[in-house]
Length: 412
Image 1 (cartoon, rainbow, N blue to C red):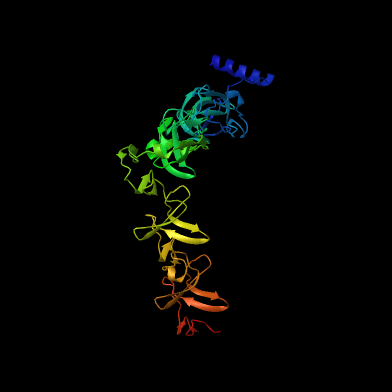
Image 2 (cartoon, rainbow, N blue to C red):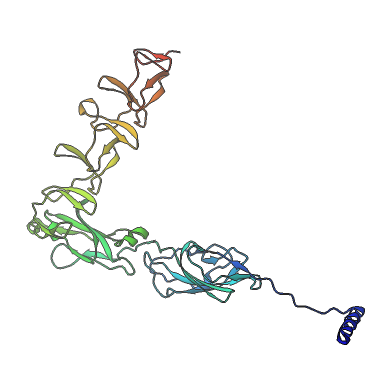
């Protein structure tokens, strides 16, 4: 009882003196940063260049070289290349970097224990991994977009002094190591060698006629990745070499697309890569014109490549199927019907027809783009009806209560 009275007296004394007893309040828990977004980008890098220094990257804005967050809960505090910044860049390389993120206020925000691709977004790159150091620091590793670029051309290209037809050219550093090499007799392409992993080639087996020869070479992509991100270089042209009649090749030693030896008798259709060419017994190729082969017409471009699909020649449009053969009559392309002239006796064979067409004793109409018309159409001031799906003109009938006469004209 004495103790209780003493305690109450002490409390009363404190109240009288206006003194309060402090009590420590518990701190509020930090807010968890559940996801992270980074914006990353680099200025274009030329093939063979090294990476820019980490200090050149902006961490507050998105232009030039940059890695920034655009978020007030965390910020970029440090950058470090994982890919060596002394490494020369090639097509398809994906430079790798580690960025250090820190909570802007460690008392208010905290990184959680684990992050992965589902909650780390890299705008302009690809997420690789992440790990936390304490609650206020997160390390994120990512790769920038693959390096794109145009390959350099070989600096030199010429004929070897010994013999005929031995072509050689300088290698291109930091490239695919693959080259396209085309042999010319005058302005005619005689032989194409594509994606060659070498810096020389013996063209002599293809020099079957006297004349002035030259070759062109360019650097090209080789792998699928290089095909996706690399562009072919410009051509480098060699000097000219004259081959006299008494020195021409008999064609022995020529190779097909798969590298097997073929004789000089191998003529006709030749496939190189995914492209078809047509070769004559004299070693020349059909080019820049039509050729009728086994009763079908085919069109070739200036390099001798067979063409497919819609092609325009001398102001007229033609359609060539996947085998390259010219089609005639009605064809359907992208769900639209077109009429290709079936006979040379009435215009140009195979050329697209526009205007009125009499086919199987029925009339059809195609517009200026060659598309077959359907439904009600006004032509030269008159209204006509063309049956949908079939396209022929309605005559001597009533369409939806509107009569059309023997010429198919509706009179109001």
